[in-house]
Image 1 (cartoon, one colour):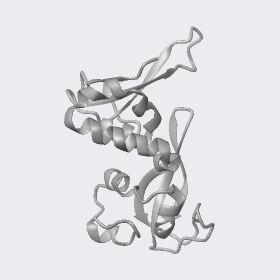
Image 2 (tube, one colour):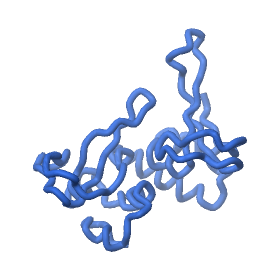
Image 3 (tube, one colour):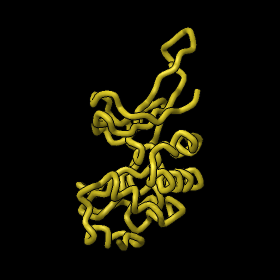
Image 4 (cartoon, helix red, strand yellow):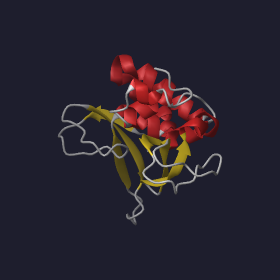
Length: 175
């Protein structure tokens, strides 16, 4: 089941990672998986924007280096990010940066409460073909939790409104 990179024939598909539409004639990455609902052992394809796939499905993206080569100049940078995600498996869990709405959430790294209005990173797990929310980490615990300070690009990608001032609250978030 080789994964596929192709131009989207229409604008109907949505990215599994960010839930945004994949525009017609834009590149998309398709992760081919066995279809659990097909008794004959058929396949299904989960579609992603190429950068979203590199960040959230790094193993599948890195396995398709030959197919990804058609993406042009950015292919190398995407493969680099995917390989980083394979080396540090928790990086694929990065979702968004936000301020804590309440003071009830517990950090998955240090196990302490995250105070209201403190910066935190929300996490996602990929289970059974879906991304499921899985908690938060303090901004100050992020580098230790992800085992690398290289999580900032992912935060910028999945939190487009994040300013340089907001990133200054993350220890490694210098722009």
